Amino acid sequence: MKIIETPISSALGGVLIHNIADAQGHKALKKGQRLVASDIAKLAALGKTSVIVGMFEQGDVSENDAAARVADAVLGTNVSAFAIGTGRINFHSNVRGVFKVNPHALDQLNAMDGITVATIPSNTVVTPKKMVATVKTIGLAVPETTLVEVECIARDTANVIGVLELAPVNVAVILTGSSEARERVQQGLLPPIRGRIQDLGSRVISDEYVDHQESAIADAIGRAKNAQADCIILAGETSIMDATDVTPTGIRQAGGVIELYGAPVEPGNLLLLAYIGALPIIGAPGCVKSRDTNVVDLVLPRLLAGERIQKRDVVALANGGLLL
Image 1 (spheres, rainbow, N blue to C red):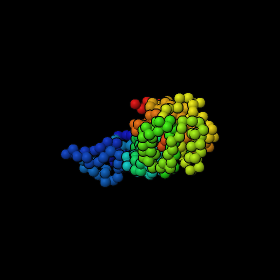
Image 2 (image 1 turned 180 degrees about the vertical axis):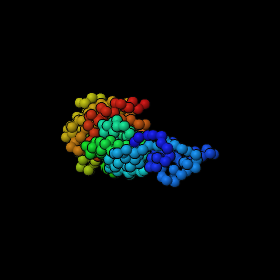
Image 3 (image 1 turned 90 degrees about the horizontal axis):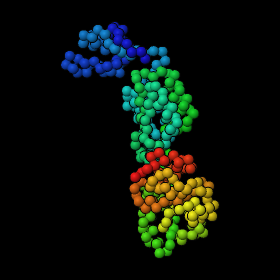
Image 4 (image 1 turned 90 degrees about the vertical axis):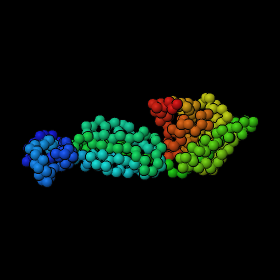
């Protein structure tokens, strides 16, 4: 778009760059509107002989049409777009779930002149109607070539912006410790763990207290598998202190593979994550007894939404991992 000052007789079809006030200072014509014949007559009645307008050039796409193109390109699963005007479109979640954004694609889009896409942090738990992102075009027109590039990026990236739905799943809780500590451990750990699971729309299908022994833990995991658990949470009288400690050894005896031990998150450095096939097992650190945000709150929603979290995903939590 070319911005020029032109006689009002040549301004037809141009986009007004600034508001025009009448003699009383009230807004007579607003910036951004495309001038039609009645607007030219109004300018003349106001005594205007010239006006600053933007004139569309070959290949220009108006701000609202451009924003719609960007929104269509990046819109992913379980998200709806709502046009606001002046080149802005907001995105809202359709479901309760975990918001996901592809950071590389987002950087590519925002590096383009005339395109801005802002989001809430990836992996945020959202509810229906929660606003998760906004698209805003800069300027009154965007070149077609830019929009083609946006659409190419989106074609190469599945779900630039989307939400993984948190459908109800079955969670088994296994607590470990000595017989003497049983009541204290159950009272301290079970309510906050159960509360987290229920807050995410899932259910505890079993909770079991077993001796802090490898074979007892392995057997309990086997029972949870047989009960069709979709996720297992292990916590105990003492935190896991080493990758060869009792709990990870019991997980291995049950056929599990340790994905990671240790997380760059505080509270929650002593997180353990393992899998038996597709079944995730969280070895929760002691901070799980608090309902304050800790590492379990960063990984549990993603696991319940069906994401397979790998070590690199937990390593990425370091930036922002100090939760105190």
